[in-house]
Length: 351
Ligand code: NAD
Image (tube, rainbow, N blue to C red; front, side):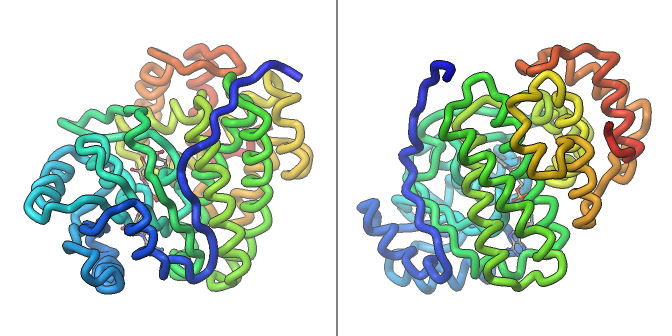
């Protein structure tokens, strides 16, 4: 066994059907009495219901969260935090709402309770991505990690199938990259493998029966595992490319991860053969081809072309992705990354 460093996440995780009913006790356990509930405009009604459930513990709802955590939205929310004298935030929603809660916590150190309703996994990472003047930057800081996460599968029953699939593949990408991360540890590897297994088993069921409570619970369990892996270890080529495509070409976040995952996994398959062997087994023996077959079978997008990217965009994306590359098990050069992007653009099955 190689040497390793292990630091367990200090977050408190409450998991199970109906457990969002425990939100008031979660707020009180943090010694807080004035919670501001956060959501996107789309989930405003759910946030208001949650605020009612909190009763006197809620100071209101801010439902202006949007994708990529723009700093001007954070500033608006901070004004509300100040006016209402909020002493914690309760984020109800996906990565966009969680991002806003993290941005507030980063600036105020207010504690966060997160109730995730997608599988993105942001709720268990100390990472905040935010945008200002069209530029996305990422910070990692202990104050960003939410204190409490309540995973209630009942709140995911209505997550549309398309979003369930792409959001699940987004989480799976955290796990695949966690398996070959330089700073992986035995626990992150266990979590990554069981996270991949959980999504392999649950997503095909959800495509056919979106309200299946067991499959919903299994997928949310996978989200916790894969998100925790992302929060624990460093990411490589896959996340770099998705960050480049999302940040510079505004491609949709989860869908981009879904398209790229089989290709980046195939790219690293040989260099990280041993590290990826158990994951390859889960998908029929070939990590790249197997993930592509899985992605196709659950109706996820397969081609970057569908996001309106042109071949000229691929040239620029290859330049940006190789300018300041993250560490990757297989060395990166512009030619091989351009080829990889071409394959993902065409939507062909990787070898
Ligand atoms: P999202 O939060 O943007 O949600 C997309 C839309 O779906 C929103 O309108 C939302 O209100 C709605 N929605 C969410 N849950 C729903 C449900 N159960 N039913 C119906 N509608 C629902 O999507 P996402 O993919 O969860 O998050 C993407 C964002 O998260 C990106 O900005 C990404 O950068 C960030 N992210 C950050 C990290 C991190 O560690 N920092 C990790 C993963 C993703």
